[in-house]
Length: 421
Image 1 (tube, rainbow, N blue to C red):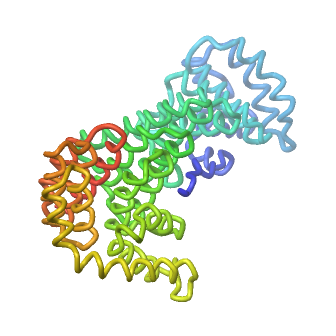
Image 2: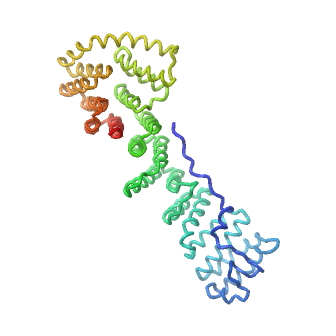
Image 3: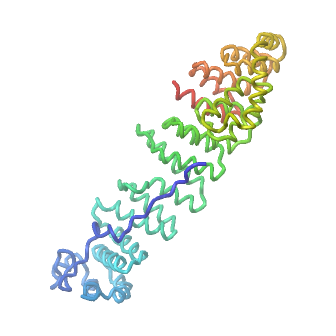
């Protein structure tokens, strides 16, 4: 139904980490970066003597004409035991990272990055990127809690990436742990924060949230996400997506379903033959013939029906015959609605709606309400009639009174009316 979001294409650490890691140059077998350590005088100012003695042989292995990365890796555990200062930790982490890169060992790369971050000596402008790579490696290893923590740290440090959305990646880590509610909550928290800051939340956040509510059968949450998506991005495609999800996740009686299909028609969100057929069957061409004619015409115009379609021709024949009868007998129907009970008034309002006489339809629905008709049904249709007249503010107010099973339909109609204001 909806395009499933894929978190991101992981960026290769091998190709980019050299741009921010403190490279272990090891020139001449005794230099680290730009600081010569041949005499270890400068080295000892920040690095402990025991660490320097353990570090240099490993550095020489890595820097040899034929590098002995396996040997250097084997010596890392002993090196770690000599760490006394944060400068030691940073340099050990850097060496670990570079050995991991050389050996394509992602676990080693991650450990090296984490050690450098733990040292507190990573340049402030690189902290976000370091955490991004830690999170990426942890994510690939399916260590989702660690990935989430690292991604959150990257986000807090202001890191952004053109190919990845940290908000969605963080939400995805919850989802992959089976916590779909936490995943959705994180997305909607980001939406709320953006709104509070006077910004428009990213559309893909809301689309991902909508997808999650559909995948995990969360009808109440789907309604909330739909309202937010349509408030910020009321596109025809989003009307299709949201209304299809609402329709799929809720069980409605035929009358309520008709009111949802009416919204789909108004929002140009009817896109499937099955929707047109269900709409027509719920209306019944023998009862709401004129509206059925409109639905058939719409289906024909977008290619869901053809003029030679057996179903189309059969229904059209019934509707055409009945429609003329409704048009010619409408005054009698209205008279019965005014003098009869609530059912007569509702039926008269429905026929008037079918004829496109929304002003009188609203009046008959109000009469039905006064005579004891179900308030949620009557107010839904009063609101729809108001919206069809262009009286959007009144429609929003009316839809706000609808409760129960029809509440989601009324709220979606309210979103539509608000978008027209």
